[in-house]
Every structure is written in structure tokens, then in C-alpha cells.
Length: 302
Figure 1 (cartoon, rainbow, N blue to C red):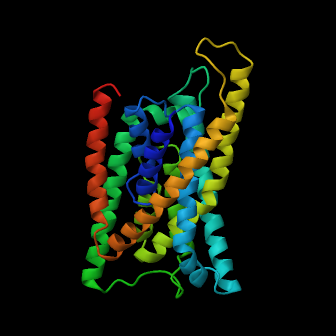
Figure 2: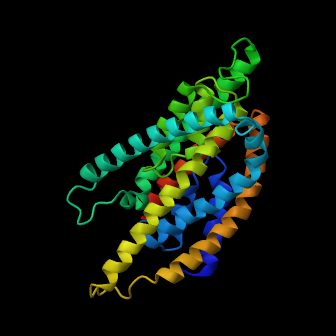
């Protein structure tokens, strides 16, 4: 894996991660076109490290707003903490159940059934993109309809945060995004918040706050997967070649994280402007088009 490929993947990740178009789908397709294996331990670690870069972009971009809304007082932080813990708990439950179900059904009988094996299957990424595209379009038009009527009150508290029910639904839907590359985490959670009656800005803030909470454990999990794979490779004489170089893999992943951070800052400004100008549904249209492209690439043998 060359440095220029990592930089290209990092820019794709940074731009797409913070737009509701599924960064993972874009990165996986790019990896396929570059001849890389998206399900390998090195590539799954690279993907989560790129997510780490964009996580820091989220922290930089939203920190001032989060400070005003979530950390303005002890009560405000307590409310946010309850919502974040509740949503993340539901995400973990849904994600783990789906992981076990997929490993025991789709990959039953495989020598080493792991959810990461799903990441190489474009035939699953395409419908996931289509599903989130439809969700985004529905949420976008529902929001426009509500604004035009201007009679349905937004549900939430006065500080612009969400209700427990709204946060719970966002957490449940976020769990679907864990195993299914293509089902945009930000697109699905923000759309879910909007469909449950939340205003766009609070739904966006909370969605990215959930990403910051979720990223560290995912990074740790993939790092352990790479370490285990490295140890296994070093103790077996595999005809495929050399053991995994952990230090080189980690260094190149850190480089990718830096470029993803820079691209992520640019993407966040674009996202916020489109959210506030009523063009949310166009991201859904893009996802539907991208789904067709991924189906085509799968049919061509990628």
C-alpha cells in the first residue's frame, strides 16, 4: 500500500465521512479499484484511523457549539450524557446482534467468519446506499413539508438538544451502519432525528457527537484485529508472503488520519450550509446514483 494511495483514500474518506453519503462505501470502492482488499486487517484499521482523523475534524468544527449547548451548565451536560449513553448503548446492542447474525448466516462455514468480510462485497454495499438514499430523501421532503405548513412544533427541550425517544431512535439506526458499509451513519442518524421531529441543527450536532463517542472503541477493536493477524502471520509459514509490518501499518494509518482531518473540515462546512438551505434531499439522490454505480462495478467483477 503506497503513500499516494493512502492520501487519496484519506481525502475521499474526509470529504465523504462528514457528508451523508457513506464514506465507507466510497473508500471500499476506491480500494477495489486500486486492487486493495477492503477486508484485510491493514485496510480495516486504515479505515477506522481515517475515521479518527475526521473525528478530530468534528471536534474542532463543533466544539464551540457543543460548549454552548452541551457544556453550558451541569444540567445541560447531564442531559447530553444521558442521551449519548442511551443512544450508544442501543447502537452497541443492534450492532452486536447484527454482527453475530451475519457471521452465523452469510459466512457460516467460512474458515474465519468475521463481519469485516462483508466489507469486500459490493453487492451488499449497493443496496445499503440505496436504502439510506431513500431515507434521506424522505426526511428531506418531510422537513420541507413541515416547514411549509409551519404548524407542527419541533419536539425537544429549549436548549436545542433532543428527547430521549429521538436519541434512542438515532442510536438504533446508527447500529445498522456498523456492519453495512454504504448505510451512511451520519445520513441515517440525522435523517432519523428529523423524521422523529427534531430540528436539523440539533440532529446534526448530536449525530456527530455520537461519532466521537463511538470511534475510539472501534479503533481499539480494529487495532487488536491487526495485532492478532500480525501474530498469526508471524507464526505460520504462509505461501502468500511476509508477515504484517505493524509499525509501517500504523505510521501510514496516522498519515492518512491527518489528510482525512483536513478534508473533513472542508466537508463539514459544506454539510452545514446544505442542511440550513433545505437541500438535504439531494444527498439522498446522490446515494441512489452511487448505488447504481456500485451495482455496475459489482457486475463488472470488482
